Length: 345
Image (cartoon, rainbow, N blue to C red; front, side, top):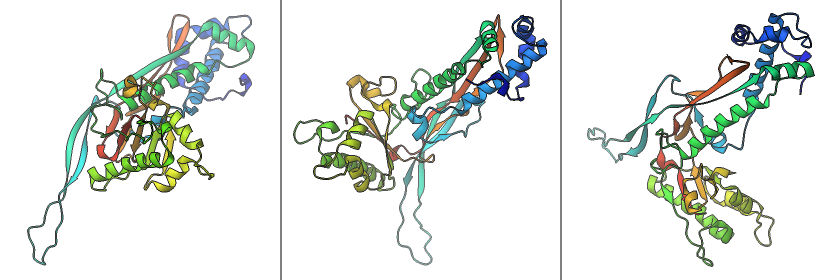
């Protein structure tokens, strides 16, 4: 915890005015143990406290929310919009040899399918009671920053869940939703145990699964799409990153990265685990999922018209409350065939 004397001179004027209108600073200033010269002094002190807490919350990162970490995020849509229409594209047409004065040039184009995404707000709040303010001042320590960090985390967690699995009730699409046109792939059974799980496969069989996934994307896109990022459940990721090929110092993951064309990154995503019921739609079948995609916002992005914000505080009775909000359109999948969902690894 930091000492109150290290407090910045900066504070949000709107928070200060809300505090002063609440009457809370006057009550605190009148306390014999508070050591405030006036209600204004108390209001400025706690406005600075809140300013520090808000800044601290924006600085905090949560890398375990992997959709927000690995899938490109965009903010193209105005925060006031209620819907967002984008097009999923497929290249069409052909070219041919022509003469010098040819007028019948074949037409190359893109075929677009419109998708209208709903835009929804996600919100929560945190707050401090008058007694918590008294206690922080009396102890010479700050208000508890963890409340604000928890509010930020819960909003980010919800955005991350929507990015993976969507939300059918509100019409938001995720990258694993069953109606997003991303193709499904079922790995082949291994030779020994008739299992599609990588834990039951040799390094050669695992590499074959990865290259078969790449071949599938190449075939349906005429080699236009070359996905570069593979997300795996943690147990699968740990297995291939630690299991060494016999008589070598080479792990299976290094072997895959060295031998699978175009693949640049293999990352761990707990949301793909067979028991992650919130984010993995195939968890009902107790199946792990792998997600292969191109890490390019032109192909696929998570659209957030409004990133996490904290509104000026409100007061209710003997507490101050800080409302928090974000807005999301879920996953915007411009080129569905640039990605692949492999079920049962």
